[in-house]
Length: 149
Ligand code: IDP
Ligand code: MG
Image (cartoon, rainbow, N blue to C red; front, top):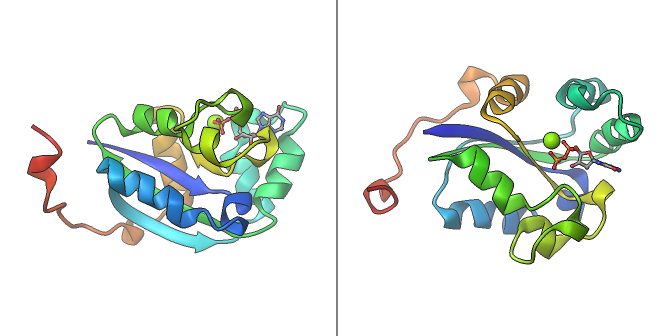
């Protein structure tokens, strides 16, 4: 089983899309293992997006991501890093297929409502950045035999 980091961004929270996004992960069969609603600091967002520090939009992105609440989550499932990226669509909503979260729910690259880790290694780094060990809940998905052969 893999874990990935997902966050509804301030635009997604303001637009009332947390429920819709959580629903899609639940319906897919993924298991929620940690979640919290918070306003992140700009410093925290600079660490989160460190890979993008040389991009022209880096400062604005970090400022925006810390401008309001985000819903941060860790989800678990088989191949979840790859499958989450497919559920998200492309970084640019305008290039995202209908049926994907960004393709269905947003328009603009700077307001693309959701973050999802892009690699297993980045998922681990991001989960460690956002969550402490005691924030994870241990439980079994009772319908697991009906999700996985
Ligand atoms: P991702 O969120 O699909 O992984 P990244 O390339 O990691 O995309 O970029 C992180 C975030 O930075 C994007 O989700 C988007 O909010 C923002 N971003 C990326 N490219 C641009 C751009 O060209 N203009 C403005 N914002 C951008
Ligand atoms: Mg990314």
